[in-house]
Every structure is written in C-alpha cells, then in structure tokens.
Length: 401
Image (cartoon, rainbow, N blue to C red; front, side):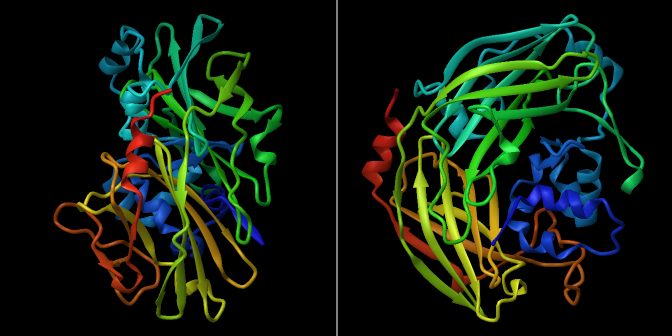
C-alpha cells in the first residue's frame, strides 16, 4: 500500500524538467482544482505553505502549477505604498473570519474557539497565536505577527529562476519555514494509516495566516483521528530573526461528530466508486471514497473530480484532502469540505471530467468558459444522493461549547 500526499508528490515531480503534465496531477485533479485559490505548496524543508495565486492562473496551465510548487510561495510582490502601510494595521481579534471558510467563520459564534494569549518576541518581532479550533477532523491555528517595517505579507515570497535553479527569496517578517509536533512527535513521522496533512493559508489581513493539520488513513484501514486532547508544538522561522518562534499549546476537541456509512456504489466504464462514509462536524464535512478499477489501472479514474452539494443545489467549498493508492490500483480518497450553511436533508456527490483545450490529448490545458471557469462534463452514472438525518445535523451545528 502506498500512502501519498498530493503536494509532496507534485514537489518531487517538479524538481525535474517537464514537457507534459505527469500522471499524478491527472490522478488527483480533484484536490488541485477545488483548492485553486489557496493551493498548498511545499517549501524546501518539505512543509506546506499556501500561495495566493489567482484561480485563472492555475487553470490556465497545469505546468504553471508545477512551477509554483517549485518556487515555494507566491512570487507576487507588493507595491511600496502597500508595503509601507502594513506596519500601521492593527491586530485583528478574530482571524478565522478573514478566510472564505464558513466553518471557521461560525466557530466563534458557536463558542468553539479556544482563545489563547500565546506570544513570542524575537528581535523586535512578535508572533501571536491568538486562536485555536479543533473539531477532530482538522485543527486550525491562527497566527499573527506584530512589529514595524514589514515590506510584505506574512506568507509572501519571491521566486527567482525556474526548475532546479529556482530559489525562494524571503523578506523580513515572512515565514520561511515551520514545523509541527503532536505530543512531541513530528507530523512528518506519521506514516502508513496515520498520515498528517499540514498546510498554511493567507487571510485578508497581510499580518495573519491560518495553519491547518488534518488526519488521514489508507485503503482497508479504519479512519484515523487525531487524539481528542494533545499538546501541539508549533515552530516558526521568520526571515530576519535568528531564533525560531516556539509555542506549546494544549489542544482539545471542541465539537461532536456525526457520521453515516452509505456504502453507495456506482460504476462508470471500468471503475467502481463507493461512497464509504460522510462525517459532519460544525466546521467540516468529510467524504471518504474508494475507487476500484477492474483492470487495476489508475487511468480509469485519473480524470475524475468530485464535488459535494446539498439538496438545494448549493456547492460546498473544498478544504483539502489526501489519498492512498493500493497495490491493485485502488484508491482511498479522504476529501474535506466546508460545513453546510444549513443542515441538509440530502447530500449529493457529483463527479465530472474537465474538458481539455485539445480533446485528443491526455494531458495539457484545461478549457475555460467565458467566465474563466472550467468546462465540466458531469458523469451522471457516478452521481449519488444520500438521505441524512437533518435534525441530528442541525443539533450538531447549533450545539455550543
């Protein structure tokens, strides 16, 4: 059994010269496409940091995606006027409201956010961790910096060169590396059926970012969960300071979880897709899928992208995901979506294949419509609608701490 982290695989591929898009991109485009606005990428130390790249840039060419993976962080630079204004911005009390994530936005309203006073100062720069939220499926950590004369946002960087010669240049105050530990164990040491995903994403405030930990498992394994309580050690290295900013934070699960196991199965061409489990928390919706090709070839499902909808036709935002490949070509995908705005009575899983600019090519450019969106060809044979306990989910959504 091979456990893979999409971001790690793409980084490994990105180190070589590419004339066409590799198979791994096509195998998991669901994760790439759905997270276009804030896609997780890795820095040179193997840790994920998110890049603020416009979605049209990502969709324009998959090769460009790899170039950004190589670079580490967004190469977009701020104007001098904007950079000069950064030092005058006040600290923001609720960072979770600064991202397009309904679960995080409503967490404070439900009394689910752990407020901390954690802060560390080195060489005139203070790093705060004011808020933590953990629902068992993902842990979100708010990070905010304070100080003078920051020329850019906290997760910005400049990429110089291409391919193996690419270098990431950081300016003062930018996070250039970070590490996380769970009860003293580094997150990268979780392997097999206990895989930890780690990523960071910017917010509307240039001084703030949110870092996320997610738990995943593999084919034939029961779902892996982070402990209900643990000590999180978070280490951040900022450009311009020698010492790391180290935080020891007690973390405890703040929400309940409800789940169902539909075991719904659909067939398309020579692949069988099984909707194995759906989990709900007040913050997150998790979908576990098993894909089994009859001939053992991953090509049977490599172009499929999955979406989650409610019964009123509302599409959920994609949060993240990870997959695991088995020896016979089967795949277990664990996809994280935002919470529903209202408790649904049904949920619908849809699959589509994006149209290519050159339909005869197996790899290449995605075709966009007049609004700059992917042209989707939905696979009706794989659509699955599942009845859920609306009252139970409504109580879960409205249950405060």
